[in-house]
Length: 190
Image (spheres, one colour):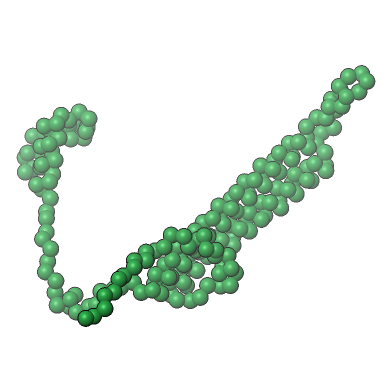
């Protein structure tokens, strides 16, 4: 089989676009013929004796809660990034507005006065930037991925949610069910 591979030019094997359909078909057949295949082995007695893992209601509820936690934490992290971005842009805009020259209309015509950057404008811009960026950073810290993973592990272990997280989980986070409900009709025995 190795000899057949050597018959094809190495450059044709490396360059897919230069291969014509016959060479591509031949290469595909050779590659599929060289693959080792295994049949399924019969089930042993030990594997038949073990019960199958069935998702219980508590497992489904825990996974539903985990999905809601993932959505909550992802949205809050994105909210923190948005607050930081908005605060930075707003602060930069206030800082640049504070250092713009002022135009005054006088009886002699418009006059441009350049006092340099005003201290009040710079202080306002820095204040806006620090306050809003601080709030965004606090959201990123409170809803970090590490805290999310620790809380997810605790929920899967069966521990209850902390009250502040339970209060933040709203019904909109539980809109996609993990285990869909299927109605079962029962027939009475004759």
